[in-house]
Image (cartoon, rainbow, N blue to C red; front, side):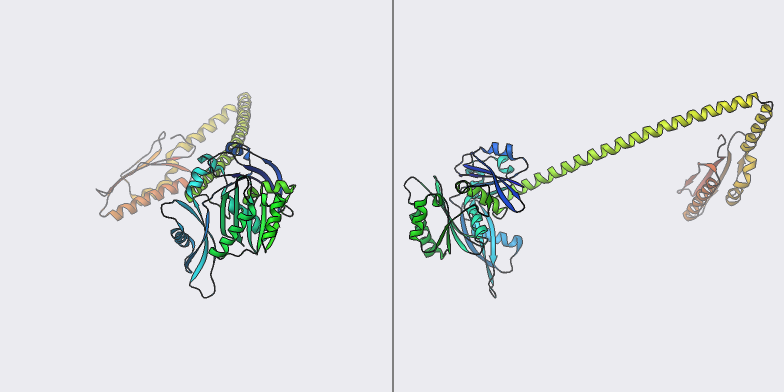
Length: 447
């Protein structure tokens, strides 16, 4: 599986400061390339890879909210959102992990807040570009992805710096506890910035990291790493690709550590606003439906071609059989015409056909119908079908409908005896009358 990950600074520029292509095989990530590109270029080369966008956000905040223990699902999300939103600011609230101490009536829930303007404006991406991203996350959250992977059971302060910014993000397990983003200019004392931030967290937030993880210039600048170790009493280590990312040098790892952390997080910290997420889900659903319809159309086309081919083959065979029968008939006619007894045979066949057409021969089959309904007249002709006609009046609607059912049953009985029956009977439910007319012809005889 491939992941195309890019970091945008959040300063309304559409050029990624860092982009990288990662490949995951058998649970291990490898680095396939590092490059810098505009958003449109990323979309054009995305292919089948998942596109993961991380964006700088100085106004990102992580907070703890206490909620009633009984709240779950949408009710909990709505409660957390109502308690987290700042006045006058449209923000995206992502719920995190909740913990419920035994016997407590409230649970502590972590929430992460991002102004919607970060997604819609400051990311530098237009709607189509944002919609192409499978995941939209923030740089502090991406750094926590590294911390959570390397030290899942410890409270880690991850300090990162590049030529434009400093990010300090603190996490414990799968929860972000604190994040701060500040400008980094030439001459900034990185170790001092980290020390001030740790002191602020301890005094004002009550957060005590167990480990400091250094990345970016905090790790690649040896003097800075040594200065941090010299001023801090807790364990301090530099992030390394060993065991996380193969085919990647130490220097390259720290260049692309934010995009890689975003990939490690997956959808855990996806800050795509709900309204855009629903639009993307609908678009994907429609795309899936269109693909399914296309497959069905292709399948139906194949089936139709098969049936057409089968129909054509059967038509050809039927034509050949008809031609053979025609030839046999003509040959038989020639044999009969040349035979001395041909005239006798033809006379006998005509006699049989004439006898079969005689309606008198079929009165026995029609007799139950005539005796059942009574008749005004029975029309018998040698050249016409036998016709049974009758007119009846009834006292009730039920007796009329019963009579109609009896006529239909008799017609079906005659059909089962290989007669063609034309039922022209008329039944009036208003006047309670029946005008029966059945034309009966033996099958094979001309009507």
